Image (cartoon, rainbow, N blue to C red; front, side):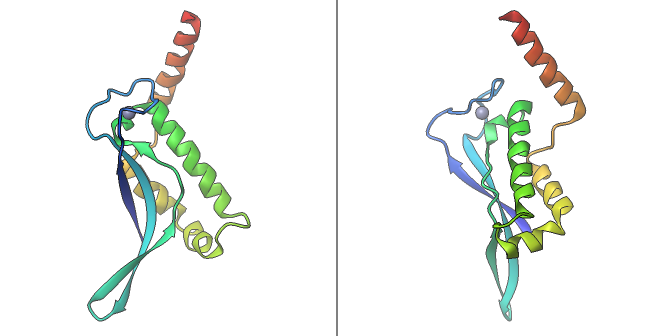
Length: 131
Ligand SMILES: [Zn+2]
């Protein structure tokens, strides 16, 4: 199994991340879990195991809030995998490999660190006091 990242070019800087620098690639990244198998000798094919339906803008990867939202969405979808009427085959394959899945996705979208979360909350409190 592997994670493929679909890229879709954004027409504009439409990201809503509060501290997005609006730099780098203006692409929306969407993870898709794929499985490859040998179709015949020397030929391997891939098929989609799972589309979690979450995405993040490449330009927002440095923004903790954007990553928190991404991971919240992903964890919600992961939780739904174990419940009917989720796709049973995808659920069965993935439920045993959730640590692997989180690690693979985390290579591209790092899970927010404790320090980053503390800084994010502090930032929110500062902006609330300022209003
Ligand atoms: Zn952005």
